[in-house]
Length: 117
Image (cartoon, rainbow, N blue to C red; front, side, top):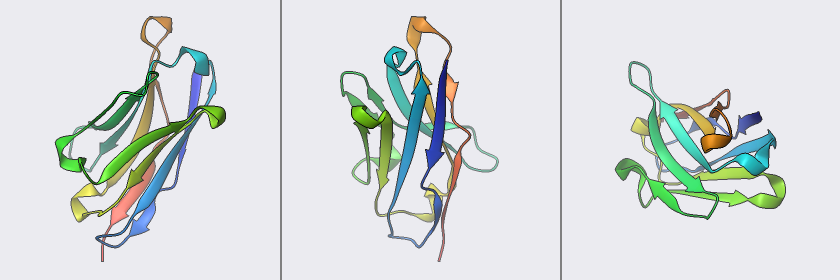
């Protein structure tokens, strides 16, 4: 099992920045990829960005050029740097660790991001 704890959400004005953190514990050596997802009220949860254990990344079209996912292996933490935030980025952001054949996916509890003036 892997446990995930997100932090870094909050209220920010349009055009502002936030950095989310996802700290992993437990069987971290089994993590194949870590993704950031978001869910706005009335919407389905959607992938925002993902980083694999080999440092490959991919992004949703809506955040390309504004968001950057990165990892610090020494701290078992994945970050999501969010710049040029827009009101439509408002959502609860979750991180997910995918373990592939080593076990079920693990989700964090989520952190609220609100972009509003």
